[in-house]
Length: 594
Image (cartoon, rainbow, N blue to C red; front, side, top):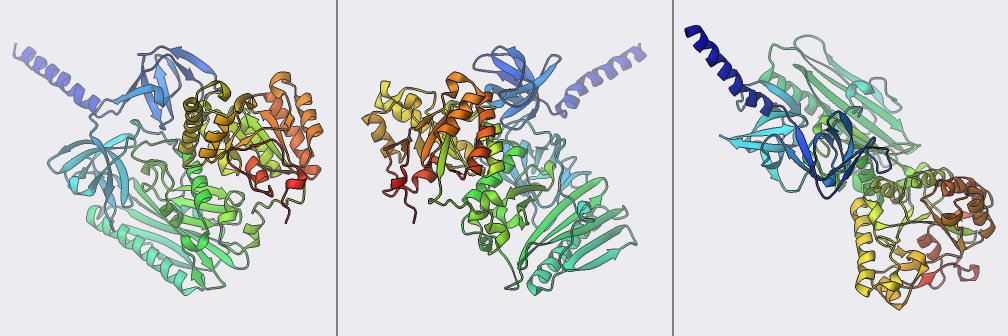
């Protein structure tokens, strides 16, 4: 009897422990809302449909980047758009916070006790999800784990961030060990090593002959060693720890140089990474600040945000994904463009490590303050004394838009993409890419309404909604051109466009690609209609159109045509482009060539 009683008690204890174990396993579920929803094979609107589920279906969330969720329903796995899922976690959620510990490493504990095990380390700050607040401690979620931080280290964050974390498998980060064999074109190597004892280090950095740069690098190196050793002496005495600092140095041209320093600290199975960038002007013997690198930063920040979007599409894990001016303090100039090294935890989830985002000079050279031929060769120059042609594409974006962008990029051409607002969010990456590469986004209304057959308020709504969604996904791009569906315009449309500071783009060459769906006929229409100042109408919906553009663009360039946007073309109008006015062609006699 006593034995049976004991077994019963053990069984009760086991059952009572099950919920506690489950509570520490992070999981998310989503309920489909607003109608049926496709599960797709890949995270893009055009991907193959795996299955379709009705409203109210519950799915398991495996990943969530804020735009797409990787989900599982039964034995099927695929992707659904996050906006149509009501997502909930299997743990309490009380908000988001920024954890900060200046001038010392940030340690996350296994339990709400400073003497418990440290399960994660960050350089000095990171954003976390707040799960519970009790007795001076926060229970937090970071990436796919729980931990604890003292309440004093947390500053609550405002904002509506997507629940669920992005799995960062396959995303490589920048580490000091990667720089051991990096290019070293500038400076004499300096080294400092400690091989004995439990706390060891291997350090290399360059002497570049510029006092300011040498002082900054020396201070940074010493600060890293001091921080890491202080952390070691406080928590890991008697265990093995190692610090490594390596560098890369580039000679950009005969005037400019750049240095990347990276540090990593490894102890007790944990690692912390940090980086430092310096850009040098050998003519003045100074280290260039971000302000000295740029005359303007709008395009640079936009290109940076586009790069961030490839890592993290929307607000998730406490990060907005928005570009900030402070990020420019982490820029490294190279011969190919600007490399931005975002510190782990500061602007992106700490689990991503240090991320390098490359911005080609062809996207941002016009904003650079550097006096370098390497940069100036990429500044777009249009010669109005030479023939210009404006290719325009209606009804997208679509899967074919990227093909058109690819060929335009290959031949240095620009075009105007007249988007329907209802498509923009689905193809946000395509729109961001187009803007980053210098193309123009025009409005083709929200959903292709014939504007002459609707009320003035509907006209305004169709334009304002489209302009707003383009601005939202691009971080502020301002639409300045309307391509009216069917070319339909009246006085109401013209007045509203004037009020919204938008010109109206008609066309002189209609390829009829929507009707023929023929590569050869679309190609011939473009080549036959090509002349200085024309606006050409195409649609980026059809593979036949994309194939025609792939054939026509190199031929147009070979014939000496400059492929320009509508706004670029009209910027050379001798009387200036007037909002609310319809333009289909810029006659050569109206082109300002001086």
